Length: 214
Picture 1: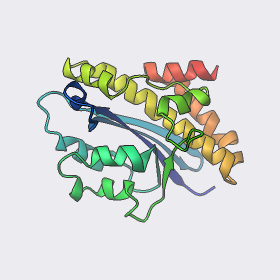
Picture 2 (picture 1 turned 135 degrees about the horizontal axis):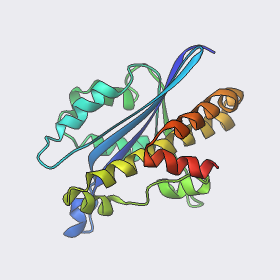
Picture 3 (picture 1 turned 90 degrees about the vertical axis):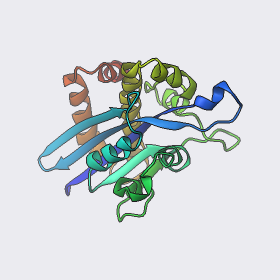
Picture 4 (picture 1 turned 60 degrees about the vertical axis):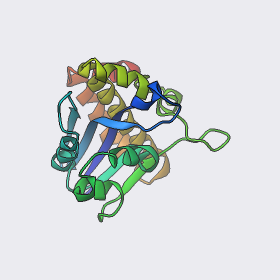
């Protein structure tokens, strides 16, 4: 197989407007990236997360994303076009971001917009989609995260991000396995390599995912 990179993205959003109205305008306070780089004979994984602290400039997340998103390869996210991109585009400075151009499909690289639909054609919430695949995911919604973030519980936001970006990556592998000709590659190499990485990692999020795979 040729060399390639597969990156999953997850975003932590907060909803400050829920306290004063029924309107919803979620703002990003954290981003996670989980990448798999295949370069024969190695398979390497990397997990990067960033959460805004109180007093941080919100445009620092855009700069962080520009630095950490791999320059090549496939990018995948759950409801990437419907939820993740609109939320990130509320951050200042997104217009000049090379990473945002890549996520939006303007750069010459493929993106995967993962999405599940219910019987009425509505988007299935991420946690429900993961539960249907027997995968762990954060159950904290934007209002819960607003409370965590307001009281500087950044560790809670970080843990949720790590849990969700690992679940996103697993959803990508499932889609590749079931919908492309690369199913054998996933089963023979990527899935075992991921399980080994989860076993070696001391992150609580990795331990949760490992326990679901047991």
